[in-house]
Image (cartoon, rainbow, N blue to C red; front, side, top):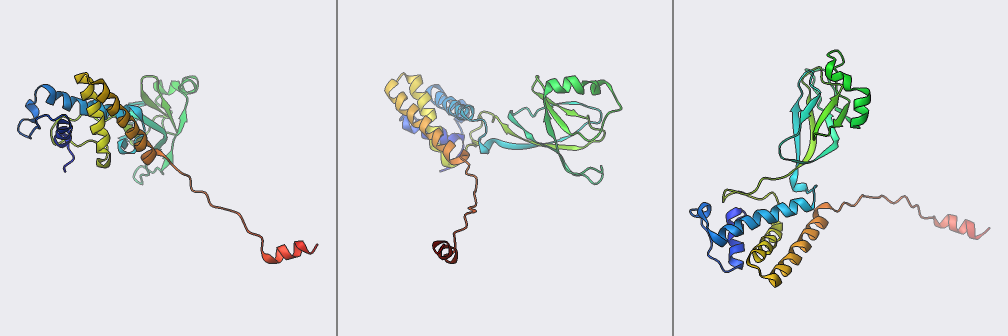
Amino acid sequence: MSYDYLAITNEVLSRFNEVELTSANFSTSRGFQTQCKNAINSAIRTVNQLEYTWPFNHASNDETLVVGQTRYSLPTDTKLIDYNTFRIRKSDSLDVSATSLKELDYKEYIAKYVEQEDDTTVGGVPTYVVRTPDNRYALVPYPDKAYTLTFDYYTYPADLTAYTDVPTIPERFRSIIIDGACMYGYEYRGETGQFQLADERFKQGVKNMQSVLLNRYTYMRSTYLPRSNSSSNFSSGI
């Protein structure tokens, strides 16, 4: 079974015993067929709203810095930035080594470094990154060369539109999307009992996905050294 917008929509439609769509009439769907398409996007949006750091939404961004520019915009699909991952990439041509940036509080930036926005003589290799109130970031000092800045972030995926679109949620969790879409479908029809059942399955599915994808167990090595027999005999003889 394929894993795209059309296949998922038809799986939801089949649960409601409705006529399925084809690639030819997918874009001209009507009535409850359209509602099922909308419900799928609603379910996916809910999954993404319930957890900000899904691994399948992880991305990295390479930004070529502009000489003399302090403030920069985030990628348009940004949901969450990991400010601990900002780093300057190594470049032999720019004579710069790989460097990790430290996060600096915005108020401290204003108190100590804001003059750099009007001073053209304090540029260099950035060592600090600042989260600004307008959801951008600033660098201290501003770059004196076109360095490459890299950072990790989590995206907020766009809605599915074309019948061939594939969700960012891995296929093994497709049942969660189906349950969520059915939940919204039952809500649309006013079927309270079925809505509650689908809602419970959907929420439990999201919890299970969180357990599988987000639980992390730090490896711990035992440092216990068992006492040798000779030591035991020696102790018992005292």
